[in-house]
Image (cartoon, rainbow, N blue to C red; front, top):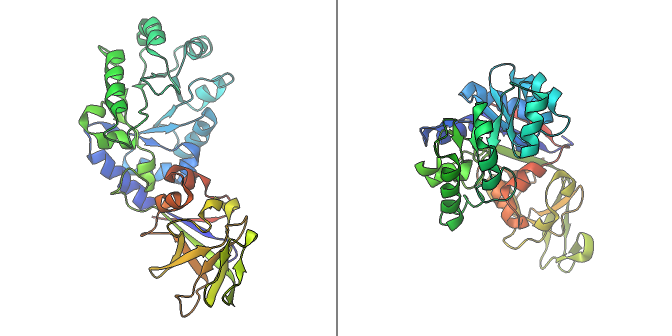
Length: 347
C-alpha cells in the first residue's frame, strides 16, 4: 500500500445521528457542508437519509446540487449562504431551499424565483450571517406572508455551556420569532447539548455526527492508517528532520511514514507538547522532528517488529486529539484531511 487509507464508518455516523435525535423532541437534520466535513457527502448523506434524516444543510448552492444528485427527490436541502447572485438556476433545478440572509437576498428570491420555497436566517448576535433585528423587523411581514419553511439562527458559544452569550442569543432569537408559525431552528450539536430550551422545532447537528466535540459520547467515525516507507536506527546525538529540531538521547528505532501536511496533518504536530503520537496495538509511538509535506518520522522503539502501517486516527485517538496537539480544533483537522488518501467506507 503506497497511500494512507482513511476509513469512514457510516454506521457510526448514523448511530451518532440517532443518539442526537433521541436527545430532543425536535426534528433532527444533518449538516453535510464541506463534503460532509471532508468525508464524502454523497455516501454520508445517503447513510443519514437511510437512518431517517429528512433535512440536510449545506454551505453553498453548488454543494446542494451535488447532494440532490446523490439523494434524489424528497429530502429538504437547505443552503446556509442563501440566494447568492447567479444561484437561481441551481436553486430551482435542484429544488434547494436558500436560507435568506439579507434584504438583497430576499428581493433576489422574489424577483428570480417567485413562489419557490425559502427559509430565513436571523442574526441573534454572532454577526456573521443573517438579518439583524432592525432589518428583520422591516421585512418580517412580507417575508412571513410567503410562508418560509424554516427560520433559523446560529449560536456562537454553544461549545461553552456556561457562556453568557448562549442565553443572550436565546433571548434574541425568541424575541425576533415571537408569534411566528414557521418551524424554528437554533441548535447545531452544541445547542442540542445545552438542553430543551434551545431545541425548538429543528436541530442541525454537524461535528457531533462525525465523532467530534462537544458530543463526547459520539462513536468514533474515522480511522487513518499510514504506510511505513522506511525504518532505521539512530544513535545518541543524531538529529531528525528539518531544522534539527529533535535530537536522540539514546539509540532509537525510527519509521518514516507516507503522510504530511499536504495530507492535512498539521506541521505544528511535530515535536508537539503533549507528544503527538501514532499507535500500533494500543502502543503510543511519538512523532519526532518536524512534520514535512509528505513525510512524518515516528519513534517505534517500543515495537519488537515494525508493521506495514501505523495508525494515527482510530477508536482511542480522534480528530480532537490531533487538534489539541496542533493547537486548533477538531473541525479544522477533519476538514483538512487530504485528497491523497485512499478513502474506504465501512457500514
